[in-house]
Image (tube, rainbow, N blue to C red; front, side, top):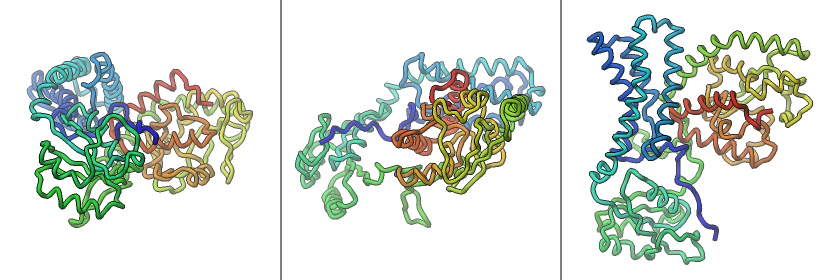
Length: 469
C-alpha cells in the first residue's frame, strides 16, 4: 500500500496548534507581556503613572499579539528575523493610528522611541533565555510518557507523527495495535505493531503505558466498546480519535449544548471576542489605508480614463459571507466587464487587458477599491479571495469542501495568494490548492497570522509576482 507521508496535523508556517504544555504557554505569552510591561515600566519610571490611553492601547496590543506562536524551535537568526519582522509591522500600524488620531502629541517623542527600540531587543533576549531554559522546563514536566495507538490507519499515523514531532512534550510512541493483516494497513517503517486489540489490556499493564489513543473508525463501534471495557482495569489515560478528524475540520472543538457534549466540525473562527477583534482591525486598517492612498486612487482613476474607454470602477457579483452575493469593487483593467453566467479568467498575454491595466494587475493596485468593501463590512482585509459567481457555481461541484471557504468574509488578500496561488487557476489542481490554503487559514486563524499575510502581501506587491497578470 501507499507509504503514508502526511505532515503533522494543523500546523501552518511554524504556528503550533497549541499543545498543552507550560513551555508552549510561556512562549506564547512572553512577547506580548514584554511589550506591555516595558511600555508600563517606561511611564511608571518617567511619569510615575500609566496614562489611561496607554493602558487601553496595551490591552489592545496584547489581544492582537497573543498567542505569539512558536519561535524558540528555530535558530537564533530566524527567531530574531521573525521578532523584528513582526514588530516592524505592528509598530508601524500603531504609529499610523497615533498619527491620524493625534495621540502621539500627548507623549514625549523620546519615550515612544525608547519603547520602539527597546521592545524587540527585550523580546529577543526573553526568547533566547527561554530557549536556553527549555530543556530544564521540559524535564520539569516529569519523565517521558509512554503511549500506544489503537488502529494502524491514516488518523492513527497522523496522531503518532504529531506526538513524535511535539518538541514541547515527552511522549514515546511504543507502537500500534491492529486486528487487520499487514497487507490491509498503510505501509510504514517507523512504528512497531505490538499485537491485536485483545492483547491491549495486558500490554498496558505490563509496559507502564500512560496514554492510549483509539484511532479506530466509527464503524468499529462494537470493538471500541469492548476495548473500553477491557481497559477499565488499567490506569492509562484514554483518548478517542474519531475518523472525522482527518477530514476538512474547520475550527474543530468540543463544546456543549445545555450540557450535551457536541463536536464542532465546521465553524467560523470569528465568534465572540475574536469576531470583534477581526472587525475592529479591518475597520481601522481600511480607514487609515484609504486616507493614505486617496491621492493614488485619484491618480489611477485619471490614468484609466485617459488610456481606455469605459468606467473607472469595475463591479462584479461575488459570493461573500455564508455564500450570499455581494458587489466587489476593482479598478477596471480590461476592455470588458464580464459579470454573467460565463466569466473568462484572465490569462497570460490576455488581449482584453489594457496596457495600464496590466500594470495595475501586476502590482495589485487594481484591488485597492476593495478597501471600501472592507469599510462597508462586506469584505475583510485578509480572507479567502472572492471568486466570480460563475466560477463558484462551477467549482463547488468539482471540489469537496469548496463552499466552506465562505464561512468567513472574503479578503483583499489571503493565505493562498501569498503562497503563489494568485491569478489564473487554469487547472482543477490549482484551484484545489488554492482552496486547501483557504481552509488552512480558517483552521489556524490568529491576529498574528493576519499580520503576517498583510506583510507578505506588501512585500510581494513591491517585488512583483509571476502569477499576477
